Length: 336
Image (tube, rainbow, N blue to C red; front, side, top):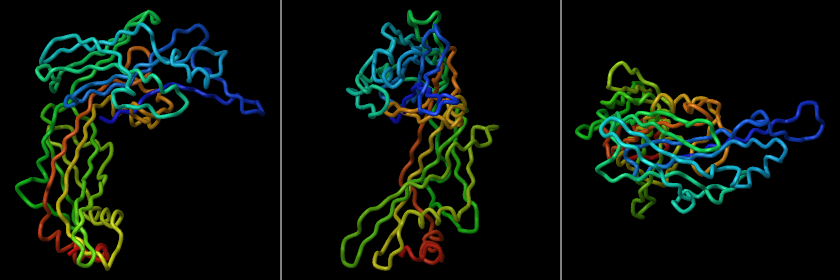
């Protein structure tokens, strides 16, 4: 699981001052502390984690001092629930855990990293979230006048249809290539596409050594959503350029192409909008400024869903192997 945490720290340089004095001016005096939330549901995860913290309200104390005191980051009496409808109807109460003890150690930074409170839900396999389930996150605390809610639909798995395990796949430098996958639930909005390229190399009489690199084909790609079949078209030359960018030229090393894996990650529209703002560094172990986008009824942050599909060991066509040996751009890589 790869999350990135959210925090709200607004440091505004005081206008007209010659010094570098920072003012912390997040909300008006007397306002209640608003929640800051980050939660992504992947139905295939063995456990689900939600981060809930609160924005600072004290305008008389140095924000750096506030950030180092965990009592300023967390609600003492917070109840976190997920209400589920769809394949099953249920309400789950999440347990507060220390992420540092769950394998999600918080990075050193402005904010206190101990404890690193997260809210955890672990379901038995019989209650695993299903594609299309609607989940409502409900936060309740005496520090707020009303419950905070956010809703997300669970994204379903999809199947990669091109390339196919039944046929060799190819790239021609002067042609386009196509990747296809099915999204039966029709819920994913944008996609990241990565290919892991596997090859082997050796020097002289030494044995072959396995090598690999990740080619980022597309990030935040939004295909035609009019049907459940998604398609990505790219320039065939990009494959050969990726090889050049990731493998050094050599006359001493003999290289052989082995196979490649395809990884496609999908996110819902809310998460896509959230990431697109470009002000978030997603995850539960880092620290940064929060974006202004939010799908919460009160506060800032995101509650949404994601999905990831990986299919491995695709092979390439004989024509592609010829290009690897003869196409001028990659000849210096010495594929044989």
